[in-house]
Image (cartoon, rainbow, N blue to C red):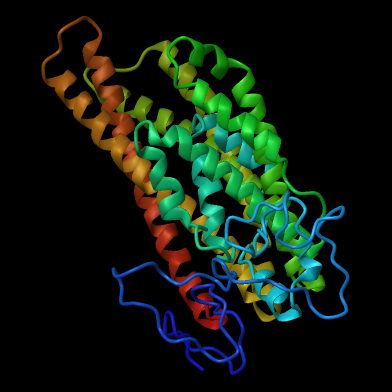
Length: 412
């Protein structure tokens, strides 16, 4: 059969499209409007105003004494219950609907420690990316469920983004909470903590007061909130994986953490080493301080390289073993590494252009004493950044080729 929304080929009788993530009716619905006309179809959530009835013989479990759609259930879609409400019980759903709602695409686990570490080294930018990115891997149930593009893009609209932070964080928690109920995957993330995080981020936009909030309260709340959300995503990924693959997933997560931490140490240290060597080649030569710094950063670079090597041992063999059991899991881990590699390419390329330009201008027209040495150091950093970007491009393309093969195998 063919998906009426994206035209992907699916097995006969499929209830959820593995390509676009939309729920398929028992008899395929008519195709939606052409691209750019009207609202896109959404994944099988009840239409506004449609009455909802519990399956025959199943006692209602909506809450103490409240009928479906009654007060306290938050029913903005007419008489249908809001599946994201705290009192919603997914056991009331028809079995095929509940099964369709369970079809998330969170296939790979990610280190909670690494999520917090990336938040710190990127000054919070990566955290918004990670939170918005989760919406692309969750089934779209209600009409206002969004994907990464809308969730992240609206954060760049001045003033509106102060409101959108609340929407993004609350809907992330609500969608993850529903999945924890459907999969019985433990506690859901705290909606109150998400509210506190949005409030602190909004206060952070206020001059002076924002500086005070950003020093202690905001990083702490970010750490707890990120830890909760990522831990839930990891539990959902493990719950959806075959039992025989779960031990390998935990091992792959640890190896990825070691590789990424190793690259975080190796990359900057190698740049300093290259910059120092270029400085030696300049007309100013090298000083004793530069030689000592070169030795220290060379040792750090070697330590980072050892961590990268240790984190890579056995990874290919594990991928090979898992590809026969659950290729979508291997694709999930490859996708994480591929996205990280492309991020390095863009960041290193931009920094190389900036530092190289500044260095060349400084060397060509020094204004103060010592400017020549600083200029050559900037040129050296640019050379190292170009080398790093080149290697990251090679790795990204290699991972992209492996991922394309796996995506064809899994149909994602």
